[in-house]
Image 1 (cartoon, helix red, strand yellow):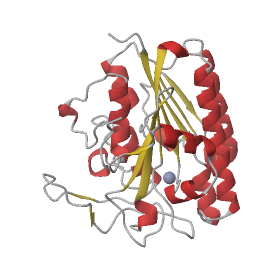
Image 2: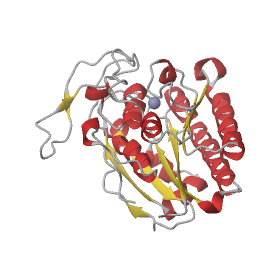
Image 3: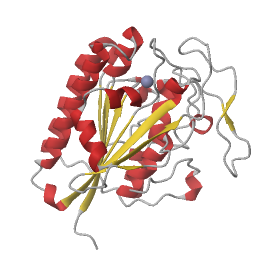
Length: 306
Ligand SMILES: [Zn+2]
């Protein structure tokens, strides 16, 4: 039996385009890529040409896969569907969030991975820090999570909210003992909506979020019990952006998402992951914690091979 205590940090950066991430200077994320494993995939949903937060109309088939029965998923490439898929390990036709209206969420049947971890192993401590209050209001990250730190980014301002979220998560990692923690940073999305993902302001927002991530990792490494812990770190996004800024539709720029996975203190070699999907994030976190995935959960994702 391993003497190590397995722990997981999942960091979500809203509306972060992977090609921009590669092009821009983000040293902490570059370090995680070089010592971790990473890849991109395209969201299996998206609807062209409709305004933000409107309900879905067109059906966009996902890339057919053996055994999927020709399943189609009606959803916009918006934050609600993206974060709900990351949280639950299921796609929008299952968790029910197809746009930012959260019309008929199914989070009782498809709870977030932190809630699942707690149910499977009540001794675990689970935590979530985020500034998009809708994720708490509608239960994408549910009330059974031990520590929920929730700000309203619209009221506080997204950059300020990110700072406060990062500082609160940093304190929590230093002073408490979370086993699984989700941290959301949102200014990249806000800036891209205003100015697009090719401006210096987007680069600066990414740089700032990268620095927050670095502080979280430094705080983990400084934990007195760090040598007895095995930390898996996952970084992902919910959707991309068109060049002019905005999302919801079917373009590759909007549908391309990424997952970066790393084990602190271990070298995974910077190897490619084969099309990691948003729905794989939760199962990967659960697997890292030693929580087996129950087929009865009917998840779409599976643990990534790290
Ligand atoms: Zn978003």
